[in-house]
Image (cartoon, rainbow, N blue to C red):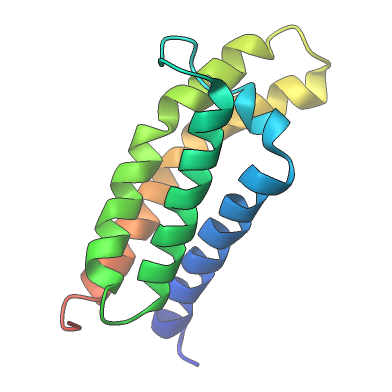
Length: 126
């Protein structure tokens, strides 16, 4: 399978894995929900897990890939505040955990660019 065909499936796999994790171990995600959001954190955890699973399915299917990849890029931008919340909350944790929380911040940039690249590669598909 050529690399250009693998990339969307790898992105879909990442999204699906993250989506399942929101249901398998929701407590760790609850802690990253910005306090400014209304309602219970668990609701946001589950909603973001459902969104990731839906995006994974959309990216995996050539017919919906372009739109789903663009939505994925927007999703990665949208969850950035949760990563900021995690970095703030974990600033007093042991160094490895604090480093992991801080590393998530710049990681959003390549994820957004990856999703946009998948959208561009899916332009001819509909």
